[in-house]
Picture 1 (cartoon, rainbow, N blue to C red):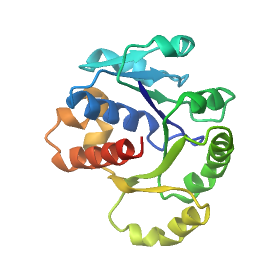
Picture 2 (picture 1 turned 120 degrees about the horizontal axis):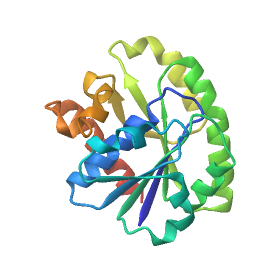
Picture 3 (picture 1 turned 90 degrees about the vertical axis):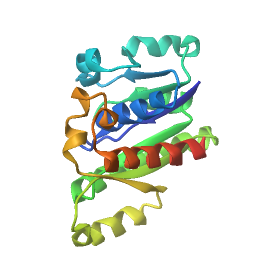
Picture 4 (picture 1 turned 45 degrees about the vertical axis):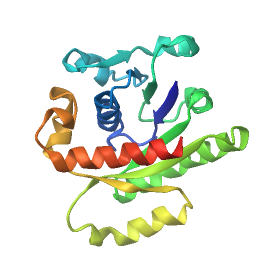
Length: 199
């Protein structure tokens, strides 16, 4: 089983939406997928009745991690740093770090990247990537913020996720793959392929 953890200490950057859409994408490829909902808000757990082919697991199932019968486990994490993150990193093959190009979101990444790089010292096989989420037209106005992000010497993925209504409605449509938004679908497929190529 491969494990992808979605982590960022800043709330509102799209961790839960990306977790769902990646799970939906992998499910469409015929894989057996589950999401471990460790976010105390429990958003995925509350809406899981509308998902097809995706199992949402409670945080307690982390204790039985090695016995879970899935091809991929995606882990949605809370919007703050916890001691549990180090445990999650230790079982992860890849950590996805979403951010917007908003200055406060980028500044908040410092702590997350610091914990990730510390984890890589202990687990050299651990890989991670930063995905820029909710990209709007006119992003050129945020070039300075992007330069700040690059100055962190973080691994920035090529795939980017646009700000689209279909993402906002993901929980009601089994992800963007339950909509007619082919551009959003292509974005998620590109992101999934980039992650899979790393693991």
